[in-house]
Image 1 (cartoon, helix red, strand yellow):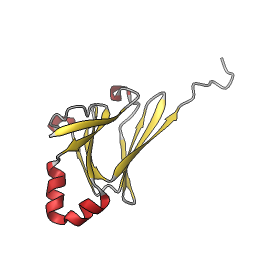
Image 2 (tube, helix red, strand yellow):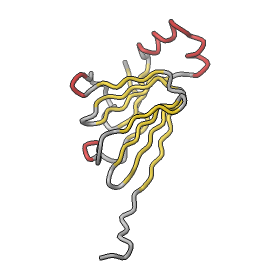
Image 3 (cartoon, one colour):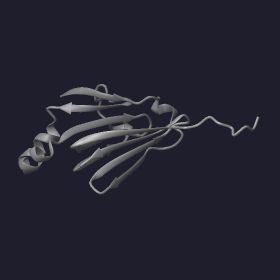
Image 4 (spheres, helix red, strand yellow):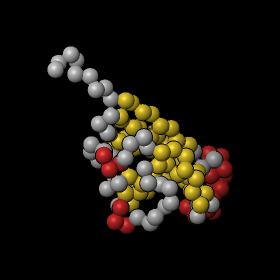
Length: 128
């Protein structure tokens, strides 16, 4: 199993303000992470499969700590190809993973991913 690092979090996941929010919206799986300086929304588009594993039961996936990686030559993709190769080919499915400290490993079989960053303001509205 080889990994290819695609994107790195701009913060340390150990500094998150609260737990990761995970939701499924239509065929998209969305992770939302809140930090004091930025809100991060990672959307895995056409996410046909997803798996969350507690950090207590997580295998090491090199490069996935605080980063999105693509798992190349994925066994999970191979299993899906055996079940329905036409959909795997049609969607161009890839195996993504991201490890978040204290939350564990999130894995997705999806067409692609998109990241939205929303910087948080340090303004005090003129109050000192």
